[in-house]
Length: 120
Image 1 (cartoon, one colour):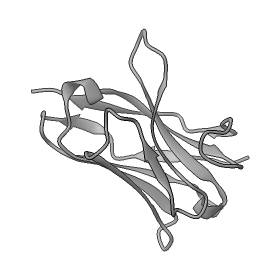
Image 2 (cartoon, helix red, strand yellow; image 1 turned 135 degrees about the vertical axis):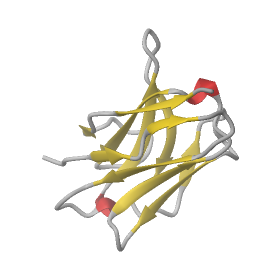
Image 3 (cartoon, helix red, strand yellow; image 1 turned 60 degrees about the vertical axis):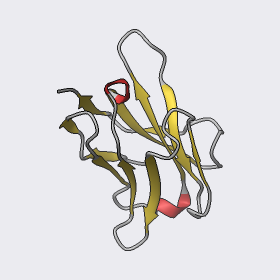
Image 4 (spheres, one colour; image 1 turned 90 degrees about the vertical axis):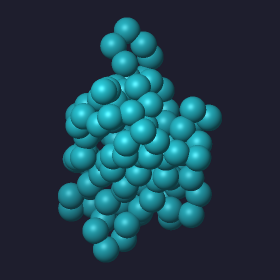
C-alpha cells in the first residue's frame, strides 16, 4: 500500500504563491505517475497537473498552464507543485494521487488532501 503525504497548503492572497509537496515514504516516487487533483465543494474533482513516472513529461490543465509547475525531486523523493500567480478560483482541496502505469490512467492510490485558500 502506497502512502501519499501532502504538505504545503494554506491561505495565500491573490497573486501570491504556494508550493505543495507530495511525499511517498518508503517508496520511490519515480515508480509512479503522480497527479494533483483539486476539488471544490459541490463540484467534481478535476485534474490539475500530472508528471510521468520518469519525471520527463508533465501535463497541465488549461486553467493553470504558465502558472503551475510540477517536478519530481530525486534526492528528496517528493513531487513538488509550484503554484504562482494564484487566483481565488484556484482555491480548493488538493489531492496527490498515484498511478502505477502513467498519466491519464486510473488512479491506484490517493492522498488525504490538503486545503488551499486564495483570498484577500
